[in-house]
Image 1 (cartoon, helix red, strand yellow):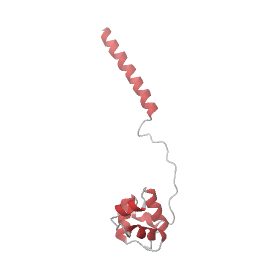
Image 2: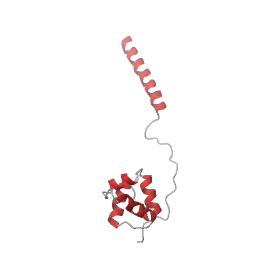
Image 3: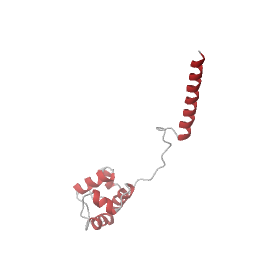
Image 4: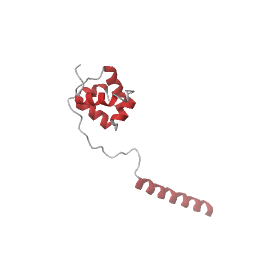
Length: 111
């Protein structure tokens, strides 16, 4: 399959929000030599084993094949997330609903 791209190894760790120390801990590497080993992987001086790459893929939340890309993916802007209403819409809806419930209470008392 070829060697993993060192630039991708660094990108994957950084995009996962992990420092060298964090990555070493998550990858169950030796605290003494782990940082030096990761740095060597990311400089292309050493190649991680397949099992180490699989562990990195899991801890970095990436596909195993990502490590073999020629360059890191471009960062894209995400569109607006419509799963959760914005706070302004929530407050507007709450105000509208509370107005309806107040109206219903006053209407039911009049009957």
